[in-house]
Image (cartoon, rainbow, N blue to C red; front, side, top):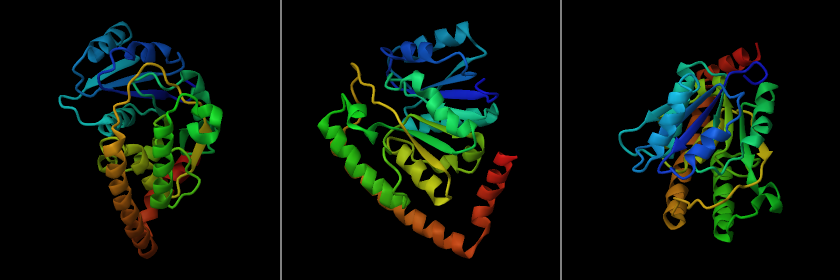
Length: 263
């Protein structure tokens, strides 16, 4: 436990046999559960993760998708398991070893202290934090940052492509998890949905970590696809806000959970 809170780490993984052992092995002891979501990997990812589960069955669980469904879907599978196991907080750490476990307390503290509902790492907070990030990736992140800000109408969003996040159980309960975009772009979709209900989103300056992994994102397809997703998200938010204005029951669920969170 971390300060009397049960913490779970969700590890979405697809063909990460070169990194998954380092990811699982590097997660601190205060993390109560580790859910490795093997998204139908074709390599040894699942077998390696299963060895950890065999040696520590109470702490590590491997959940395998029979068909590759996308990183967003893998994370939703993990979130649902967190809800079933009544975890207080859920953290996302990718299976490619790009997320430094030493930074976990910085993501967790605002949630533990009741100062935020959702925390997200911010690699774009300073030039030194972007060390190792290609100029093409920086450009893509800058474009998508502004598109996400407009879609969410939340101009405090800094690094929407960062998957290193933490969230409270109560916040997860307020989301329609089955409606989250299932592939790359899920993080933008979540930010739009959380912004629409005025969830407290806190950016945490965290340096980027790059080693020998090869990105699975094809930016020439990713940016147009995500731009279309964000346009739809923008229209969804407008519709939701109009409905909210005419029907206070929309915000009742969030307010009820928010009040429960503070009790």
